[in-house]
Amino acid sequence: MPLELVTIPCLDDNYAFLIHNPQTGDTALIDAPEAAPIQAVLDARGWQLTDILLTHHHWDHVDGLPALRGSARVIGASADAHRLPDLDLAVAEGDEISACGENVRIIDVSGHTLGHIAFYLPHAGFAFTADSLMNMGCGRLFEGTPAQMWDTMQKLRKLPPETLVCSGHEYAASNVAFALTLEPDNTQVILRAEAIKAARNNGVFTVPSTLSEELSTNPYLRADDPALAAALGMTGADPVAVFTEIRARKDRF
Ligand code: ZN
Ligand code: FE
Image 1 (cartoon, rainbow, N blue to C red):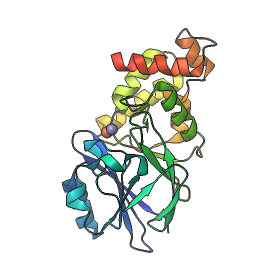
Image 2 (cartoon, rainbow, N blue to C red):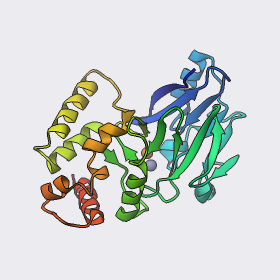
Image 3 (tube, protein in one colour):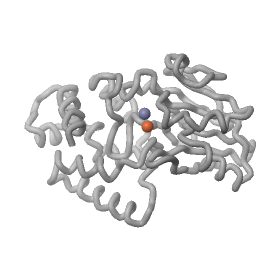
Protein backbone atom coordinates (compact mmCIF):
# COMPACT_ATOMS: atom_id res chain seq x y z
CA MET A 1 0.00 0.00 0.00
CA PRO A 2 1.39 3.42 -0.91
CA LEU A 3 2.15 6.10 1.66
CA GLU A 4 -0.56 8.68 2.15
CA LEU A 5 0.55 12.30 1.72
CA VAL A 6 -1.41 15.18 3.27
CA THR A 7 -0.55 18.81 2.52
CA ILE A 8 -1.49 21.15 5.39
CA PRO A 9 -1.64 24.93 4.98
CA CYS A 10 -0.24 26.77 8.01
CA LEU A 11 0.30 30.42 8.98
CA ASP A 12 -0.18 32.80 6.01
CA ASP A 13 1.42 30.81 3.20
CA ASN A 14 3.39 27.89 4.68
CA TYR A 15 2.87 24.19 4.02
CA ALA A 16 3.54 21.28 6.35
CA PHE A 17 3.20 17.67 5.19
CA LEU A 18 2.13 14.45 6.84
CA ILE A 19 3.04 11.06 5.44
CA HIS A 20 1.29 8.01 6.80
CA ASN A 21 2.02 4.33 6.29
CA PRO A 22 -1.28 2.43 6.50
CA GLN A 23 0.57 -0.87 7.00
CA THR A 24 2.72 0.13 9.99
CA GLY A 25 0.49 2.96 11.28
CA ASP A 26 3.53 5.25 11.39
CA THR A 27 3.08 8.95 10.65
CA ALA A 28 5.79 11.50 9.94
CA LEU A 29 5.49 15.27 9.84
CA ILE A 30 7.73 17.37 7.62
CA ASP A 31 8.18 20.82 9.18
CA ALA A 32 6.11 22.33 11.97
CA PRO A 33 5.08 25.90 11.13
CA GLU A 34 2.28 25.90 13.73
CA ALA A 35 0.67 23.18 15.80
CA ALA A 36 -3.11 23.70 15.52
CA PRO A 37 -3.80 22.88 11.85
CA ILE A 38 -1.45 19.90 11.99
CA GLN A 39 -2.99 18.57 15.22
CA ALA A 40 -6.44 18.96 13.66
CA VAL A 41 -5.49 16.64 10.78
CA LEU A 42 -3.90 14.13 13.17
CA ASP A 43 -7.03 14.10 15.33
CA ALA A 44 -9.41 13.81 12.37
CA ARG A 45 -7.52 10.80 11.02
CA GLY A 46 -6.65 9.20 14.34
CA TRP A 47 -2.93 9.34 13.56
CA GLN A 48 -0.06 9.77 16.06
CA LEU A 49 3.28 11.27 15.10
CA THR A 50 6.20 8.84 15.12
CA ASP A 51 8.73 11.16 13.43
CA ILE A 52 9.17 14.88 12.82
CA LEU A 53 11.56 15.88 10.03
CA LEU A 54 12.88 19.45 10.07
CA THR A 55 14.25 21.04 6.88
CA HIS A 56 15.82 24.19 8.36
CA HIS A 57 15.88 26.40 11.42
CA HIS A 58 13.61 29.29 10.38
CA TRP A 59 10.79 29.96 12.85
CA ASP A 60 8.06 29.38 10.24
CA HIS A 61 9.26 25.76 9.93
CA VAL A 62 9.85 24.87 13.60
CA ASP A 63 7.64 26.99 15.87
CA GLY A 64 4.90 24.35 16.14
CA LEU A 65 7.33 21.69 17.32
CA PRO A 66 7.06 21.94 21.14
CA ALA A 67 3.29 21.41 21.08
CA LEU A 68 3.51 18.50 18.62
CA ARG A 69 6.61 16.51 19.48
CA GLY A 70 5.28 14.27 22.27
CA SER A 71 7.29 11.06 21.97
CA ALA A 72 8.01 11.52 18.26
CA ARG A 73 11.60 11.23 17.05
CA VAL A 74 12.84 14.65 15.86
CA ILE A 75 15.25 14.58 12.92
CA GLY A 76 17.25 17.50 11.52
CA ALA A 77 20.60 18.56 10.08
CA SER A 78 23.68 17.94 12.22
CA ALA A 79 25.16 21.13 10.72
CA ASP A 80 22.25 23.10 12.21
CA ALA A 81 21.84 21.23 15.50
CA HIS A 82 22.98 24.34 17.40
CA ARG A 83 20.02 26.39 16.15
CA LEU A 84 17.34 23.73 15.70
CA PRO A 85 15.14 22.39 18.51
CA ASP A 86 16.76 19.42 20.34
CA LEU A 87 17.26 16.62 17.84
CA ASP A 88 16.89 12.90 18.51
CA LEU A 89 18.67 12.12 15.24
CA ALA A 90 21.14 14.45 13.47
CA VAL A 91 21.69 13.75 9.78
CA ALA A 92 23.83 14.97 6.89
CA GLU A 93 24.08 14.77 3.09
CA GLY A 94 24.04 11.19 1.84
CA ASP A 95 22.61 9.65 5.01
CA GLU A 96 19.81 7.13 4.52
CA ILE A 97 17.38 6.78 7.37
CA SER A 98 14.12 4.93 7.78
CA ALA A 99 10.89 6.76 8.67
CA CYS A 100 7.31 5.65 8.14
CA GLY A 101 8.67 2.29 6.98
CA GLU A 102 10.36 4.00 4.02
CA ASN A 103 13.93 4.86 3.10
CA VAL A 104 14.59 8.58 3.40
CA ARG A 105 17.66 10.06 1.73
CA ILE A 106 19.15 13.29 3.06
CA ILE A 107 20.18 15.90 0.48
CA ASP A 108 22.04 19.06 1.51
CA VAL A 109 20.19 21.91 -0.24
CA SER A 110 22.05 24.90 1.18
CA GLY A 111 21.44 28.36 -0.27
CA HIS A 112 18.37 29.77 1.51
CA THR A 113 20.20 28.87 4.73
CA LEU A 114 23.42 26.94 5.28
CA GLY A 115 22.43 23.56 6.64
CA HIS A 116 19.06 23.40 4.90
CA ILE A 117 18.30 19.77 4.03
CA ALA A 118 15.74 18.06 1.82
CA PHE A 119 14.21 14.66 2.48
CA TYR A 120 13.86 12.38 -0.55
CA LEU A 121 11.78 9.19 -0.43
CA PRO A 122 12.81 7.23 -3.54
CA HIS A 123 10.15 4.53 -3.16
CA ALA A 124 7.23 6.93 -2.69
CA GLY A 125 8.70 9.52 -5.09
CA PHE A 126 8.37 12.45 -2.69
CA ALA A 127 10.99 15.20 -2.21
CA PHE A 128 10.44 17.58 0.69
CA THR A 129 12.39 20.62 -0.43
CA ALA A 130 10.91 23.41 1.78
CA ASP A 131 12.65 26.69 0.86
CA SER A 132 15.17 25.31 -1.65
CA LEU A 133 13.38 24.24 -4.85
CA MET A 134 9.85 25.66 -4.84
CA ASN A 135 6.98 25.74 -7.32
CA MET A 136 8.40 27.99 -10.09
CA GLY A 137 10.91 29.37 -7.60
CA CYS A 138 13.65 28.89 -5.09
CA GLY A 139 14.14 30.32 -1.62
CA ARG A 140 15.70 33.71 -1.07
CA LEU A 141 19.46 33.55 -0.40
CA PHE A 142 19.71 34.55 3.26
CA GLU A 143 22.96 32.70 4.00
CA GLY A 144 24.26 30.94 0.90
CA THR A 145 25.64 32.18 -2.41
CA PRO A 146 24.02 31.92 -5.84
CA ALA A 147 26.66 29.29 -6.72
CA GLN A 148 25.55 27.17 -3.75
CA MET A 149 21.87 27.40 -4.69
CA TRP A 150 22.68 26.56 -8.30
CA ASP A 151 24.58 23.53 -7.03
CA THR A 152 21.47 22.59 -5.00
CA MET A 153 19.26 22.96 -8.10
CA GLN A 154 21.59 20.67 -10.08
CA LYS A 155 21.35 18.00 -7.37
CA LEU A 156 17.57 18.15 -7.23
CA ARG A 157 17.05 18.05 -10.96
CA LYS A 158 18.77 14.65 -11.09
CA LEU A 159 15.85 13.10 -9.20
CA PRO A 160 13.32 11.18 -11.33
CA PRO A 161 11.07 13.61 -13.26
CA GLU A 162 7.90 12.13 -11.76
CA THR A 163 9.08 13.10 -8.24
CA LEU A 164 6.55 15.19 -6.30
CA VAL A 165 8.23 18.41 -5.14
CA CYS A 166 6.73 19.20 -1.72
CA SER A 167 7.93 22.75 -1.05
CA GLY A 168 7.34 24.99 1.93
CA HIS A 169 5.24 27.94 0.74
CA GLU A 170 2.38 28.92 -1.57
CA TYR A 171 4.43 31.31 -3.71
CA ALA A 172 3.59 30.03 -7.19
CA ALA A 173 1.48 32.98 -8.35
CA SER A 174 4.18 35.56 -7.69
CA ASN A 175 6.93 33.19 -8.86
CA VAL A 176 5.28 32.56 -12.20
CA ALA A 177 4.49 36.28 -12.67
CA PHE A 178 8.20 36.92 -12.21
CA ALA A 179 9.17 34.06 -14.58
CA LEU A 180 7.01 35.67 -17.28
CA THR A 181 9.02 38.89 -16.99
CA LEU A 182 12.11 36.85 -17.93
CA GLU A 183 10.50 34.88 -20.74
CA PRO A 184 7.24 36.54 -21.85
CA ASP A 185 7.18 34.40 -25.01
CA ASN A 186 7.87 30.99 -23.44
CA THR A 187 4.72 28.98 -24.22
CA GLN A 188 5.29 26.47 -21.42
CA VAL A 189 5.67 29.25 -18.84
CA ILE A 190 2.53 30.96 -20.19
CA LEU A 191 0.56 27.71 -19.86
CA ARG A 192 1.93 27.15 -16.37
CA ALA A 193 0.88 30.69 -15.38
CA GLU A 194 -2.66 29.96 -16.57
CA ALA A 195 -2.78 26.68 -14.65
CA ILE A 196 -1.50 28.32 -11.47
CA LYS A 197 -4.00 31.16 -11.78
CA ALA A 198 -6.87 28.70 -12.25
CA ALA A 199 -5.72 26.65 -9.26
CA ARG A 200 -5.48 29.68 -7.00
CA ASN A 201 -8.87 31.01 -8.16
CA ASN A 202 -10.36 27.67 -7.13
CA GLY A 203 -8.50 27.61 -3.81
CA VAL A 204 -6.40 24.63 -4.94
CA PHE A 205 -2.85 24.29 -3.57
CA THR A 206 -0.10 24.54 -6.20
CA VAL A 207 2.11 22.37 -3.96
CA PRO A 208 3.24 19.67 -4.56
CA SER A 209 4.24 20.09 -8.18
CA THR A 210 6.09 17.51 -10.27
CA LEU A 211 9.78 17.80 -10.96
CA SER A 212 9.07 17.42 -14.68
CA GLU A 213 6.92 20.59 -14.62
CA GLU A 214 9.70 22.42 -12.81
CA LEU A 215 12.37 21.15 -15.21
CA SER A 216 10.58 22.65 -18.19
CA THR A 217 9.47 25.96 -16.66
CA ASN A 218 11.25 26.88 -13.39
CA PRO A 219 13.94 29.45 -14.31
CA TYR A 220 16.19 28.53 -11.36
CA LEU A 221 16.51 24.96 -12.66
CA ARG A 222 17.34 26.25 -16.15
CA ALA A 223 20.28 28.62 -15.62
CA ASP A 224 22.16 26.54 -18.21
CA ASP A 225 19.29 26.59 -20.73
CA PRO A 226 20.53 28.59 -23.77
CA ALA A 227 17.00 29.87 -24.47
CA LEU A 228 16.73 31.40 -20.99
CA ALA A 229 20.24 32.90 -21.19
CA ALA A 230 19.30 34.42 -24.55
CA ALA A 231 16.08 35.87 -23.11
CA LEU A 232 18.22 37.59 -20.46
CA GLY A 233 20.69 38.90 -23.04
CA MET A 234 23.35 36.59 -21.56
CA THR A 235 24.02 34.16 -24.41
CA GLY A 236 27.11 32.07 -23.65
CA ALA A 237 27.36 33.26 -20.04
CA ASP A 238 28.34 30.94 -17.23
CA PRO A 239 25.26 29.29 -15.64
CA VAL A 240 26.28 30.67 -12.22
CA ALA A 241 26.21 34.19 -13.69
CA VAL A 242 22.79 33.53 -15.22
CA PHE A 243 21.49 32.12 -11.93
CA THR A 244 22.89 35.14 -10.05
CA GLU A 245 21.13 37.51 -12.45
CA ILE A 246 17.77 35.68 -12.15
CA ARG A 247 17.92 35.68 -8.34
CA ALA A 248 18.95 39.37 -8.24
CA ARG A 249 16.05 40.34 -10.52
CA LYS A 250 13.62 38.38 -8.34
CA ASP A 251 14.87 40.17 -5.23
CA ARG A 252 13.97 43.49 -6.94
CA PHE A 253 10.65 42.18 -8.36
ZN1 ZN B 1 13.04 29.57 5.47
FE1 FE C 1 9.95 29.38 5.02
